[in-house]
Image 1 (cartoon, helix red, strand yellow):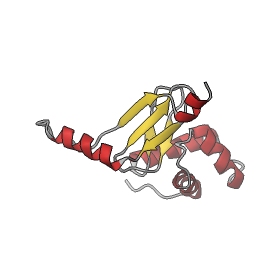
Image 2 (tube, helix red, strand yellow):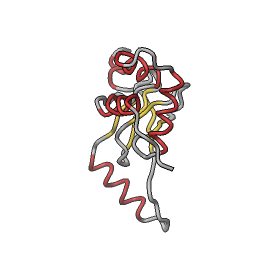
Image 3 (cartoon, rainbow, N blue to C red):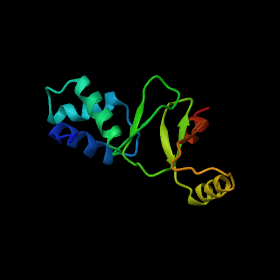
Image 4 (cartoon, rainbow, N blue to C red):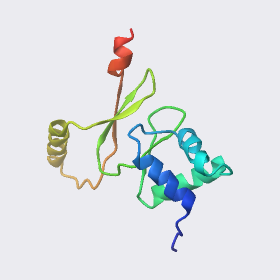
Length: 128
């Protein structure tokens, strides 16, 4: 089954590629609505689901009530702040390399991974 591309889906993907903030569906909806004022929240959710199924984005469930979305589909580590809810990427390649090395010692074939670390971000630490 071929899924036809729509202008709304393309805009959602463009918005996700244009941010590193790991936004919620509501945030994405607010941005898409600028160009498509009649779009519904249901259409945004359906397109996010399709984009995830197609492997073009990933959905993050970081222990909050709202899923977040990421256009970076390469395996990488996320950090979720338990105080403010912000989700960010951990891009320390040295740490990722050590993690991959540790995983490689296990007698398993790992094709992908989803790792989220939880704690308190520097901004929240500095505000206390």
